[in-house]
Image (tube, rainbow, N blue to C red):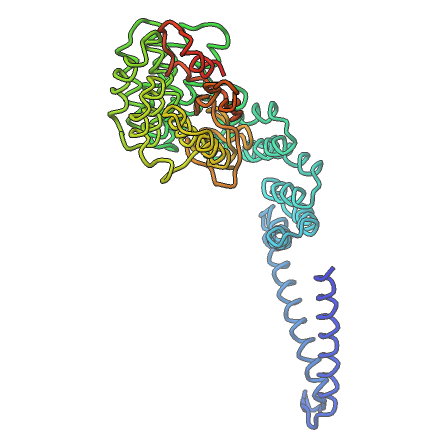
Length: 502
C-alpha cells in the first residue's frame, strides 16, 4: 500500500514537472530556424524539444527496421533461424528484465509481485529451471503453500533441478511436522547431492529422532568422507550413536550385543559419561573389574560425574563402608579439588559415620559453590556430629533455595534434561547435551544420580522433641549403592537404614 502511494506521488510529480517545463519553454523567447531547399521553417523552443524527441524515436525505429531487414536477407540467403533469433533476442531481453525485477521483489519481501514477474519471465523465456525456482520461493514468501509445492514438484521432474525440488518439498514437510515423509525426502536429497552440508545434517537429525542408529552412522561416515566433519567430531558423534544403539538393544533384551556396542562407544569417545558408565557395567557383567575401573578412571579424568561413581560402586557391591572409602581413593585422588570429588568423599565418610573427616572432605564448598547437594551434605554432617535441630534445619532451609548444581543442558535451546539423551527432547538437535550448571533462574529436577537422601529421622528423646521429620528434597536416588553397608543391622543402625530406603 505504501509503495503504491509512493508511485502515485512520483507519477503526479513527474506530470507536474513536465507541465511546468512546457510552460517555461512557451514563455522563452527565440527558437530555431531551419532552411531546407530554399524553404524556411521557424520553430519555437517547445517545438524544438518535441522535434528532437520525434527525431530520436525515428532513429530508433529506423535501426529496428534495418536489423529486421538484415535478418530477412539472411533468412532469404538460407539462414533458417535468422528471423527466429531476431525475435528471440527481444523475448529474452524482456524475459530477463522480468526475471531481474522478480528477484528484486523477492529480496524486498514482495511475494505477490515476485510471482507476477516470474509468470511474465516464464512467458518470454524457455528456462523453467529459473522461473519455477523463482515462482516456488515467491509462493512460499506469499504464503501460498499449494502453489509452492506444485512448483517444487515441477522442479523434481527436471534432472537439473531435482535436488532443489526434493529439498523444497522436504522443508515443507518438516514445517508441517510430517517427519516420516521428510526423512524419505532427506534420503533422496542426500543421495542426489551428498556434499550438501545442510541436507546431511537434516538427514542425520531425522534419523536420530527415529532411532535409526545404523542409518545415522552411515550418514555420519559419508559426511566424514566428504570432508564435512573433522575426525574428532566424527568420533564423538559416532560414539553417541553407538551408545544410543546400545540403549535400544538393552530395551530389546539383548544384553550381550548391547554390552559390546557400549564398549565400542566408550572406545570411540572415552570422555562420554553415559558410554563409560554403560561400558563399565558391561565389563562388570563379564567379570572384568579391572577393565571397568580403567574405563571409569579415564572418564573421571575428563569430567567427574555421579553416574561414574555409581558404576564404580557396583564393582564391589558388598564391601563395607570403610573398605569402600579405601577403594574409592582410586577415583578421589583424581581431580581432588573438583566439587564432585569433594562431595563424593563427604558421602563416603558420612556412610562410614566419620563426620569430622566428611567435613574436611567437603571443605568450604558450601561457601564457594553452594548447591542443594553440598548444603544437604553439610546438614548431614552437622546432624552426625550432634548439632541442634535449629542448625540442621537451617542448613536444610538453605538447601531448598540453593542451586541444583550441574545438569544435562542442551547447548542449543538451554532445555534441562533429567537424564542424558542423544537428541534434545525440546528442540530435537543432535548431540547438544552438556553436563553443566544451569542459569540461576532455571528450576529443574536434579538428575537421578545427583543426590543422596541423607537427612531423615532422628534420635528421639523421651518427649520426642528432638525428632526430625523426613525432608522431601524431590530427589530420586540411583547411586545409593555408594554408601550401602552389608554389615548386620542393629538397633542403633535404624536411622541409617531409613536413610538408604528413602
